Length: 468
Image (cartoon, rainbow, N blue to C red; front, side, top):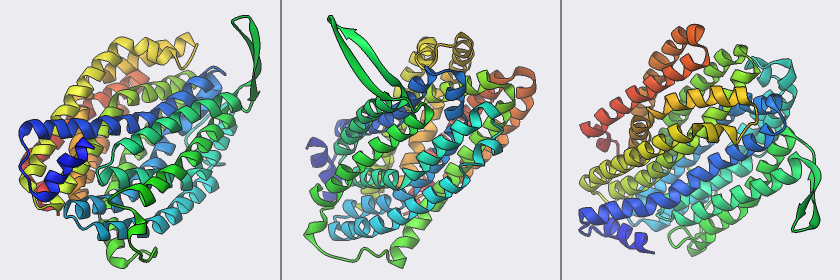
């Protein structure tokens, strides 16, 4: 593949022109964007399909969305603790050591996925009440989260396999498999959420079977799509990848202390960052919950719709992690800096364009998920507020990905903590009593712009390059 040839220039110390640097960033970003979009599209599918059942079922999923993102973030951070090591080792052309990290990470991540899934299952009956959900949605919300929690071991394997492949330079396979996962999600959801129905196509009556499980069907459909995708993702990472093929040598699957220490050093600050971010989102959910079912549903739909716009930024951030990680592993910090700047610039351009689309298409993006006019009106209003923050949000997302490539996660996580808790939540507490849900989203917009500025300042400082 063309991108592998360019990546080999990084590992071999070859000269890479500015044009090739930009082209490599684009080549790695495109499939990574596809992979990131597929994850949020699955949530969009759940929200859109369940939205057809009414405001209460939609609100039951919306109530749990911030907590599911918290658990997803913890799983992602755990996987990155190992895969960043692989990026460094592949960059240094130490392929046997990279395979050793993959081999040992399989056992560690399976255990972690079971642990966090078990925690989710245990707290699922109480969680909707802790979040301030109304009695008409807590039952469905609890069941949704229970099924989601039981799927976390498989989801952890999807994340591990995908991140290992991306950090080794293979963006296409994880992107393709994540698209397949989305297609499966649509099929399973249609079969499980709704009752059987008959439709007429070209004069023929066709019966579409359905289990009529509602909210539980949405969670089960997503869980099944994850389980099916985990199998080929792991097979490719472990046996088909030219850099990571475990059949090329042998070794222990029991994690070593040295490897775990490195993983913890990378993953713990990232986990803290996710906890800070999602903790703020959960607190925002608690603030929004007393505003009623309409506000909860509008907030949930707007969060999902906005994520369609910022997920390309996370895809470019994945590419930045790979590029910077392999450059640092190869001992080329000057190249790492140039590639980081290119990636951040690309992210800001792409997400600025997505912000324009989001502003113009906001009524359609919300309307697809719900037929309720009141929810659509409120959701459109808050989504358009957020559109103005997308360029600076991109700067923080992609710069963070570049920092992760060097293993620099502690300081950026602290920056996120200060930004979210000192700026967003303080403003939200002041504005929400006067402006309701609109005030919460104004606070979010201001905070994202502030966060982008401080991340650009750190990127320019170059201090992050000394982490490896």
